[in-house]
Length: 67
View 1 (spheres, rainbow, N blue to C red):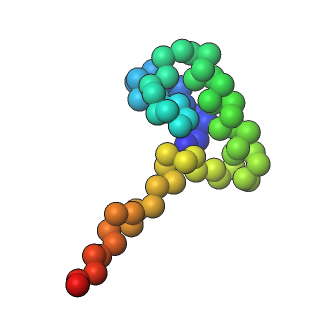
View 2: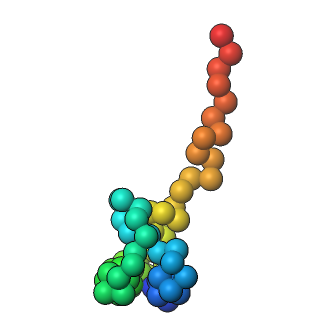
């Protein structure tokens, strides 16, 4: 997620934190997430997709083998 979207998601109440996935309620925590995303974008040349957005679109579509 681009760092510019973090505060918008926080204001809307849809920003979630790391592994637990709980909704972020603190502005300080939202700012920390924003700075972390900004660092990751800088490391990856301006393009960084966080773990929650990197989900495989084909996950769960595997065919079951007939017996």
